[in-house]
Image 1: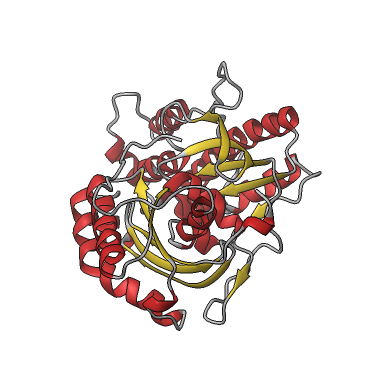
Image 2 (image 1 turned 90 degrees about the vertical axis):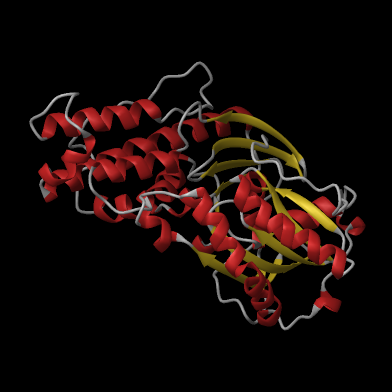
Length: 362
């Protein structure tokens, strides 16, 4: 698809796949004019994870004002908006329903084209946002990635290696066979007594620990581009049980109070190092085999500083693209960015027949 065929568009994106309610306005898939996010982390922290019913109710309460804030921040009204994009899947059913209902209603009442967007694919498109309007102050990549592009997409619900040959033209090289890496971070954080979400908690404490203190395994899989974190999670649990003088029968809820501060830091550092090593090894193998023009990292776990530095060291020939942390976690700017490129090649969808896809695979 040549640049000359592209049509200028200002797109309003809506994201509600899990526990962030977000709206953003992006021009031409690359210039973010506004990005508004209401997080539910404080609500779900009490439960140690996302409660689907609570998430859906929270989306319902804030989605209309979040959309209006995105318009106001971009100094736009509905006459400026060329299309609406919304996360169609994958995600939590109740959460997706709230976002899609809002988008469908707006598409009908404002007479705007509607595009359903794949949430995981959109994470990679956060790296194509390279310009910002006056209301945005994030530090963005200097240039968009080039194709073929190798994308490591890692978050609480997804862990994939994807080779993009062009816009909407990609091949799934590998994925997690069990837990997503972000989910493993959450579960290990709970085991050692750290607050939800686990990724930031473990990363912060790991700086005080010894990454070589506990030997943890990396799964050997038939496809070197696949991941597995279930065994790592279980090995960490067994090691903590031993560390507190117990065995496999020791309840996990008893472990945090019996760990010393130093043990907790060592477990955080050792687990993080092993999880990152797992991701970096698979990405390096894929880069050596497919020789892409660019490598990007996307998703909530992409904000992990150790993962960024280790990947940079493992692939010194690549200027690896990193979106700002605000665009690594769930946001609507990535939804609007992907929608722009999707709109150039596919027709808009009917608001009447639009259906969410909670288990939508790549």
